[in-house]
Image (cartoon, rainbow, N blue to C red):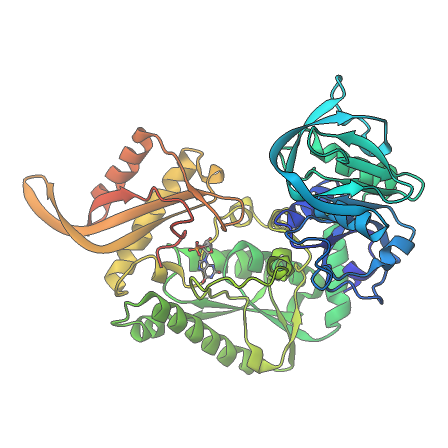
Length: 520
Ligand code: XMP
């Protein structure tokens, strides 16, 4: 990709910190392109030309675990500014002749930083009294500085909290400027990239669009490309971007599984087929999905059946199109970054996720993944730049298996119908009360339990509708949203009064963990 090869950038070498992505995002928020590479992958043949500065991330390792802390220390000869954060600071010290040791006292949480001397890195960073609250998280510390370094600031327990070798432009800081708990932490990163690395702004949705469109054109030339469109943000942005680049060479396949949200298929066709005039193959597979899912209650079985059916249908239709060479996918940057596995730890399988993106290996198509260097918020901005509506761009995430995993127990036509209506009432009420954008994801589910109720003078025996609404950064952890009693009452009444088949509404008040966001 041209994008990663030639664009001037700040390179972040990742040692497995949970904050690495945050560093990259902060830098991009300043309008500068930044890229993450695992310390294991930074080979000697790395193209150093477009790199204007390097940041070494924190990490869970110890600098003397020489086998695990392998990296290319040629970077110190590249003549570019280097900033080490936490573990990165210790790596710089150790590599250049200083010493690192287990600290007598671990330092976690807020610490008060005291300025000892001025530095380009800390311009406008310290408060008037020469101190600042910073966020620390370390067990080891630098105990001897490398040659040419001097101290800029310290805390009570860590005497080398900010150090610099200003002639070489190497800097080390023990705390985390990228987290919001560090007062004015962004200023440190800003000073580093603009005053020390002298990189110019090169990253906005407008130029991203131009760069990506050119990239796609160059890659596809005259070949046809297919794309599985789900109506979600990522696949919508991919489709619109590729369409801007190669027009009719793009063919989208949209599978109606019958497990979509109310009227979703109508909206998708209206937007992509009628408004944007994108080639779209609409596959109505409602019956097929329902038949194959008959009598299946096990969540994993449901997920597997839905995922496999989807792939089969997609392949069947894709094969009918002649001369296709490429498959477009909405892979995002966080999916690519391997930092999560830097420590080698295995995560246990909670659910087998099905994503319309993960398709289909057998077809021997080449991949186009134009969003692979973007974070979700950047994808959203790009979507707006591409003239997608706010409704599509800011839509809550929706799982690949759709409503199929929002009705524990058997999936039936009647349940789907009830659930679509309940979900629609809930989501519309959120929009009406200006709550939709404050919530990361919300949905209604139908529980397989029936309970007794009374309506008018009659006894009812119907299903329970569960409502879930969460706040989250990335779906990895989540907290339930706090609604007012009035709002809950209104939604509950609307659902029960309008939908036959539900006589009780409950609200899910679990966070993730211990629960997951979806029920299955
Ligand atoms: P969980 O339930 O694992 O959900 O806490 C986390 C986020 O992932 C979404 N999700 C999926 N997305 N295919 C997807 O594309 C799937 O199979 C899938 N399962 C869950 C879920 O909606 C939430 O946003």
